[in-house]
Image 1 (spheres, rainbow, N blue to C red):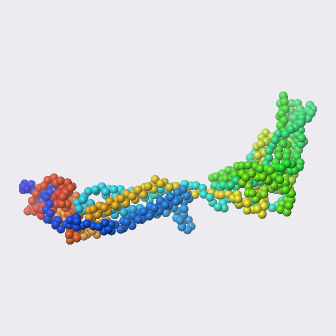
Image 2: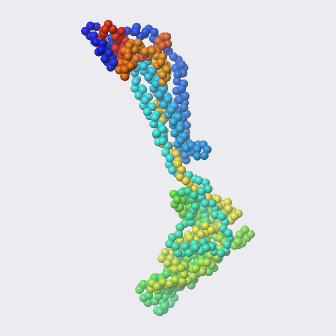
Image 3: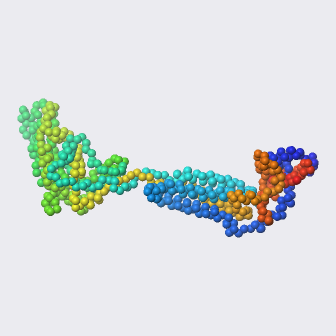
Length: 577
């Protein structure tokens, strides 16, 4: 080259420090690299066994990933939709804790695989002048970034829905047998008063130790009743007394004469009702009402009855709210004379199967109980009342309640029978010789507990990354074998025993003592790692740049020729000393 193209020493150093090597690029001299000592490709051929032997740790990590993934999927499949299990004594570990632990092991093993492959990619990229496919490192980095989100997104794989589960011994046990007593209890008397006078009656409460309970359909002794229209006769209507209407039982009602309004009501109870028919009656009574206008007089007469029956119930408690519904009534009884096993009684026969009665269970009402109730009701369902020109007079509260009920007899009868039934259910006795059958109707209590719900789309996330990581490892192993590179991976010791081309050393000069000196002088210099025949590894400049050389200039500075070749960003720079 011509001497006029020479530059000053300060300009050269200034350009080299900033990586501007494109102006100084004579062709390299292969003798400066001892290239004759670099073995050929055939000298470094490896067997598959020797190549795979470098990756034993990664195979273990792969096995750990497969075991963890299999265990995770098996756990999720086994308990999907089930109550969250506990592992270990006592409360133990919840499934969510186990999932996080498995995901942690899974993440560590998977990260180790990708990080190792990524580290090995640096050795592959710098060796044998195959400085291409640098984007594969970005793929590995992307996989690592996605792996770091395992713990966070593992919570999306499972959700927990609060659903009821059955608990044992949380509902009320069978009632103990009550003592035998022929006197009418105060609770029974109170149930009659409540039924006749109260504006509303609630179903008998069922004990539920939790917020949710269910019971199977069960039968119980109950009280049934109804009112039917009855006949009456028209007596004479003397002008001074008004018209009187009388029922066959003797119950009567009188409409006042003239312009007066109101009534005079007299009720007489029936007697010996328990001996009638195949039903266990214990009370019959009459109710009459009259309404008078200028043109006509209207009279209504009803005969009401109360009897023991068998009633089946369906009971449940949902969120603390009891739901009780009657599924049917049965009234057919048969009188059974006293034996050594029982007293005179009426027992229910031909009970329908839908009432869920235990076949061996005998439902009965003692005759003496019916007689006691009959006497009590007869004493109360007798009396009179009057209401002439809005001046009311009642012989008893019972008679007043009966007269007031005439406006809506069906509803009043429902309240009365329900009130008495509640007392029968709470105070009735069970045969001590047949106590076991009561447990047929033991209820089931439920509590809200977390149930596992698996979001399988989120399970694809870690599994797909595992497949990507395995593929990334496979391509790394293949490229390592293809380029005859030792699998040093992330080991730092090989760097201590690798040599660097002396030309590169000369360019560095005192750059190690200057902040950023190494980066400025050789940071953009491409090198390749080759193995010499004596076993040494050398970082040297590539024999051919991957990009054509733009220009060459010869520089002579103070009798020094710049020789070692630097290939920076596709431009070969040679400096002679």
